[in-house]
Image 1 (cartoon, rainbow over the protein chains, first blue to last red):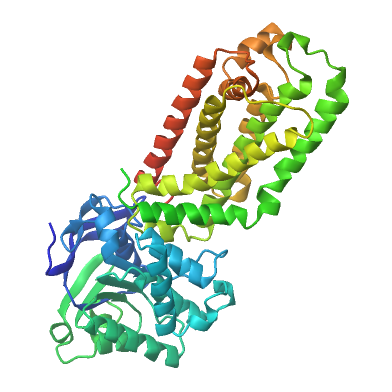
Image 2 (cartoon, rainbow over the protein chains, first blue to last red):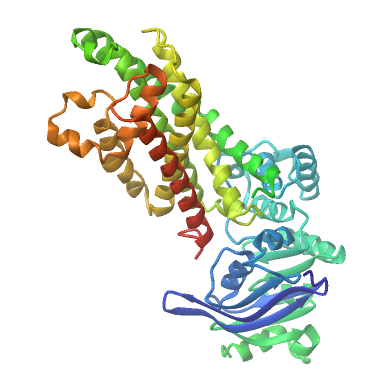
Length: 242
Length: 256
């Protein structure tokens, strides 16, 4: 049954890669319309959590839900609700960027005419329309980043998950992405963001979670987490990197 | 069973467009090879072989075998290369993140392999008409065998693509298992001319029944009971299909 209040609900999630424990009994809830920053050092478990949420990783214990739907037993429902902007550029090298997005829309059950229209709208919004007939290899790094976001948004998901979307971006692109994300959040989308840039999380997000060695070590509203400190100071304190 | 028909059609279209856009590498080479086989084995050498016991010319005998051989290789290669490259570049995530069920994902990927296999198979038959008239005796039975064989090897290709870790492993199944079984399955020879021991072993080669099913559908001649051929073909098609769906469901080498 749909839970219209809780966009993401994770309970006692445990995940092993062979004998290595990547996630240790983590639980978290993200409300609809929230802008959530998920922070942690490299290898802390951020991407693993995202992979579990999106169905790209199996897990051993726990329960993961999106708007009340179980991501394992009701995966065809939850995948419609989630859009993932991955860290790597994993595009089909044989397709033009328009074909790439239009096919992606098709997989989500969007009819071809509407898929093409929606693709053009997104390409315009992300200033890629002039490149619609080129393959992704011909795009600059910044354009590829934007294409990743377009792909995540093609089916108009209610939850947008971004795995380090501004890593390696220049300032101009970083600000552009921040504006897009703020706009999307204002439009009602729930955003789950991982980043290594503390100022990004501090500027954009409403709630913050910090994960270290597969365990959530701090979570709450931004004010609650910060308590008059800078996010960097809190991060270093709870991850033991002081 | 299909809740997202538009999604299945989109994936099918992508798979079909992919091989059609490189037809010079996917469609024409097997047709070219068939012309050479038909000319050298069928016309040049075949005219000197006495095949009266089968009621067929040698050329008439090998055409269904060649159709099957290329149907198998085209279906297999299509899904193998498509899925393996998608895993290699990690754009398989585009499909895995979509709301297609695992059944629908396999169906969509299968479409490319089946379509390429059918086009090549019928192309080989078309080419054969330049060499010898070969009216089809049982067209519905032929459609059944073409479809089931294409499904078996398209699914086999997907299983191979999931299993393989690199390009070297990708070709192992084809080189060491499929090609020997096809060659020993009766593409170029009837069972009757084999030594008794080899003939006995050949009865355990499933491809023997697929090739004979195709041959019976076209010429009316078969080394084995057509019912057994049809049964084996159907069981293998269903078995490989559901095995592939299972591999997708458990995320075999697809999910970490």
